[in-house]
Picture 1: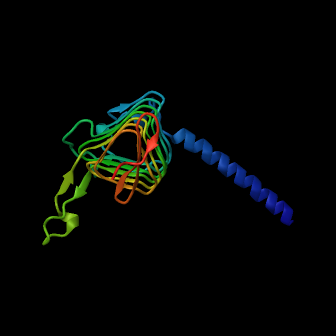
Picture 2 (picture 1 turned 120 degrees about the horizontal axis):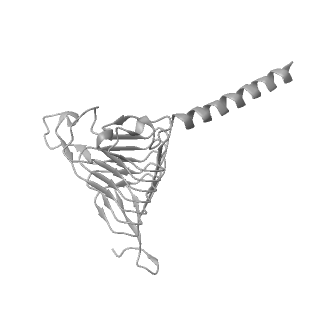
Picture 3 (picture 1 turned 60 degrees about the vertical axis):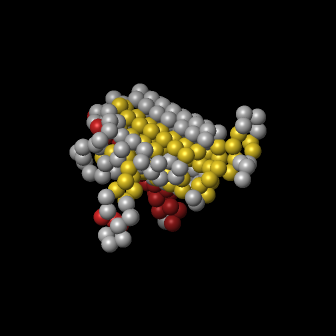
Length: 212
């Protein structure tokens, strides 16, 4: 009896997992699906995996070709549906990118992600932060400040990294896991820490530590 129950449970489990994979593939959004229509651009060969995270302001989001947005990724231009934006597009994701599971890209003015950019899981990228200059007003209700973000082509953003407003990351950079990035960084650099700084840079021949 125990073996029979175990076999039944195993068979049901396989059936459920198989059905779940089939449903997730069917529910994912490709360039020819109805769910792709609201986007400013949804490139050929790209996909947003199911289940999605929160999706706002698709009209202001551009996705290049052959890009994969993993499951549970939040993509938003603005904070609420139908919000009017100051720039167009607000969020640009280039060709052949991979945005890792559980990540969030929240744009208000401009986030520009180049081609061939890969991120790990749970990466957070935003171009807006609350002001905190007025000491008599709670920070959460002060006017936000926008500062564009640029991530250069060919870069890798490690899991758990936070890319803050004003970050400008050069091409072919590595951002270490759990780093908090703000400011400008040269191409071909390894960036790590809280706050992040350049720990190595490639001069065309070798990796070197930056001079202090």
